[in-house]
Amino acid sequence: MGEIAVTASEVGTFDEALESLVYGSFATAESFSDVLLIANRGIELCADWPGWLQVTAAWREGLETFLTRFQASGEVSNTIDVTTTTLLVRDLLDRASKARVLFNQPDYADATVNLLRRALAT
Image 1: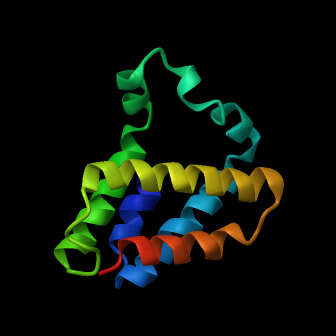
Image 2: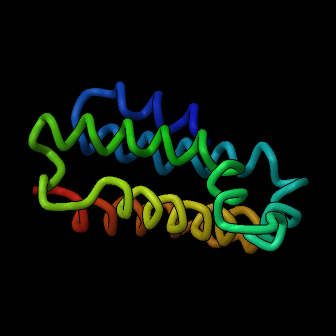
């Protein structure tokens, strides 16, 4: 997921990158659908918050790269806190990916793109 976020941060405009981020996240979740239910356990797999941060570091760092790039270009609001927003976006993509892949809810992709666009754009 971290690789998807970094790759998406290199895509042209914010709208194009956002679609790349969301659809890439869903494609990655689909590729790993056999372990998605195990991964659904989340923080219970770690003893503490620092452990959870370590497990999710690549994805968070990729999302921070994504948000920072588009904040610098003026396409993402400079009033958001990148660290906190990264955690929120990660959680949203995690839940949306699981709903789409595990419960066959295909409308999550477009709804997630639209929600993030409204929440992040300037």
